[in-house]
Amino acid sequence: MSQLDDQVSIRDTLNLKKVLIECQNLTHTYKRGGETLTVLSDLNLTIRQGDFVALMGPSGSGKTTLLNLLGGLDRVSSGVVRIQGVALDQLSESTLADWRAQTVGFIFQFYNLLPMLSALGNVELPLLLTKLNSKERRHRAQTALTIVGLTDRTKHKPSELSGGQQQRVAIARALVADPELLVCDEPTGDLDRDTADEILALLKMLNQQYGKTIVMVTHDPKAAEYASTLLHMDKGVLLSLRT
Amino acid sequence: MFQQMTTVTIMNLAHLGSRVGTCLVVVVGIGGVVAVLLGLLAMSNGFRTALMETAKPDRGLILRNGSNQEMVGWVSNEEFGVISAYAGFAILSPEIYVTINVPKLASGLAADVVGRGVSDSAFDLRKEVVIVEGRKFRPGTGEIIVGSGAVGQYRGLALGDVVMVRNAALVVVGHFTAGGTSVESEIWMDLAVSQDIFRRTGGSSVVRVKLLDATTADAIDAQLRSDPRLTATLVMEEVFFAGMAQARAGLIETFAYLIASIMALGSVVAALNTMYTAVGKRSLEIATLRALGFRPMCIVMSVVIEAMLLALAGALLGAGIVYVAFDGLTAATLNGSGSQTVFAFKLSFEMLVTGCVWALLLGLVGGSLPALRAARLPITQALRGG
Ligand SMILES: Nc1ncnc2c1ncn2[C@@H]1O[C@H](COP(=O)(O)OP(=O)(O)O)[C@@H](O)[C@H]1O
Image 1 (cartoon, rainbow over the protein chains, first blue to last red):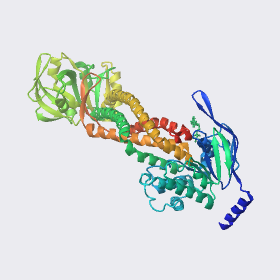
Image 2: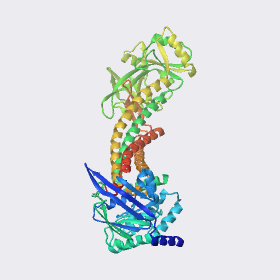
Image 3: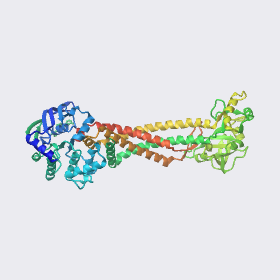
């Protein structure tokens, strides 16, 4: 592990981090009624392994759309999204589903936990798509919950947890299959300031200690303090870049 | 894949509690279909059994050649004499077969009951006929005895009651049972008296026979057919009643499937509606699962399984209703010649299976379309809440 850490830090200093995400000439349009709405136009973007990117901008500017494309939830109208060298538009629907399960962890504003499963059950969900047996699944889910700092209340249903706790469960779920990329859509949008800070700190910890690449859409100006890269988006165009 | 499906299905089922109302619509709707289907099938089954129990392997009917009903049969006294001389018969019972108009107990409306004019040999032939109340009619009088099935279904058949038939006053002097067979739906009287009242002197409608050896039936039939002095055939009871049962039970069964099909349409619409609502309410969860990498197929299967489980619950409900309300209950139905036969509803295991198969098919149809819609809805759209 320490050896690995060393390598990461060396690459860091030399700015030799591997490219994880590459978007080329990305255009995305929605058809609504008869008219075509261009949400992203000719967007180019490179995100390296280990980056913590905050994506900001006014609402309706296309942030969620971009995030969905990076997470393989939607397909581009034209252009290419390449992640770890894989062009997502080349994948079939079911291959894409498998790819998501292995590569991406999703964190949503409203947690999207399944209400009738316990915290542990929710975290275990992605592991149902793996070959792990139930004992291994339980063990890994428990570990993920420990990482996010939720060791008690694992048997509770989401409705019995606070917003912050629910988001921790959701983060554990995103983490449990050990994906390369975490994709977060306003992860603190539903939380109070203190809880939001805790969640942001948790994400930063996952980024730094576990090397997770994070792309996060946020309206929270303080979120920028946690992220390593700040992208500003307006009307489907990336305006400014701070690294 | 299997594990994914099970998890999603269990999850869906966990939701049922919050949708008791709409789920009940499906369960009750499909329950109704199954109840009607099973009720009618039980009816036809009961009918078949009632008729088939009447049949004995060594008994038959000598009918006029070409007729397969006692009602329109005719065997003259001369012919009877010829037949009596045949070897191979243990008992020969010439009988007059007529219908008698009696008001129904429930509605008071007149219905036709089988009336049978018999001699002592009819009792020898049918050992199952037992007088349970009163006594046998005396030969040469206008006395009648009534089968227990008919007593329970019609008015004015108590002991001492008088039944008017073509200006003759017939007095009920006894009630009989016949081992649950269709004979219990009949009224019996003296042969000679019936020939008088119904102007059938000089012969009988049918000659009921008991063979010394059941295996000689074909030979005797051939002999009858080739005898130039006769126009008669021998039809064994098993064949006679099976044909009758098939004709009538088949009609009821056709009716059963027809009614059930019409009701099934309604219940499929209800199931579709319920499952669309259920899937709609869960669209966010389904989208979340799909984002996590769950295959659309597994979502489809889980919704279909849920619908089929609801349908199965409906089937059991329907079968339960039929069992509690009807099984063993007796009812009367018109038979082909216009007279009435009393029979019991009889549920069978095969019918239960039929009911379940129907319900599962309805569930399959009602679940598939909503499931496909759930799987087709773009994930991003569902995640945005629409
Ligand atoms: N499925 C869709 N169909 C049509 N228009 C959509 C759809 N999803 C998003 N849009 C539109 O695309 C634009 C960008 O949306 P979005 O990516 O959610 O922006 P942001 O996340 O920055 O608020 C908005 O105008 C939105 O209304």
